[in-house]
Image (cartoon, rainbow, N blue to C red; front, side):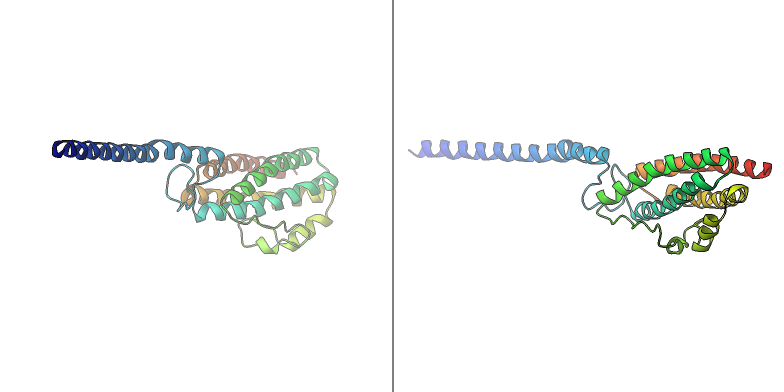
Amino acid sequence: MTASRGFLRRAALTVTAGAAALVLTACGGDSDGNSHDMGSMASESGSPKAGSSGKPGAGGHNKADVGFAEEMIQHHRQAVDMAELADSRAASPEVKELATKIKGAQDPEIETMSGWLTAWGEKVPEDMAGMGHDMGSGMPGMMSADDMADLEKASGAAFDEKFLKLMVEHHEGAVEMAETEKTEGKYGPAIDLAEDVITAQTAEIEQMNKMLDKA
């Protein structure tokens, strides 16, 4: 009986040790394998991992990314408002074509950045259209309410010149904001969008300056 009980105790210890090893292996697999895969899936969907501190890595974002999205949404909205005025007030087909291009590029970017903020649990800024634009006048290149009122009153060649001058300033502000995001941001897609803004709007600034020289 004593030998039998000793054998049973050794067998039980062996089973317990084996079970513990299996648990440790499973945990290790979750940390190095499955959990990593889930983090990658979250990153690919544009949703950061819960509790993200903004440290470098897939899906991570920080305060600079949030601020960039919040401010660039408002900045883009004003550019779209300006571009829409060109439909009925511009005289130059070239100005109208440029305005259409600006609206076509920036509307989707507004939607993209709004999606990021929602995924991060942040509030999407309210649309200030029709409420004046001084709320965002602290951002680089933003037009004041008076600037927008003057643009709305203009038409024909006078509108074209005013639109181009104001939009050059507006684009320069957007480029400045995008440069800050490249330096301070952590979220890969936001940095990519900032690079796109710099490339596209720098080219448009050059185009608009040439148009002004011809005026």
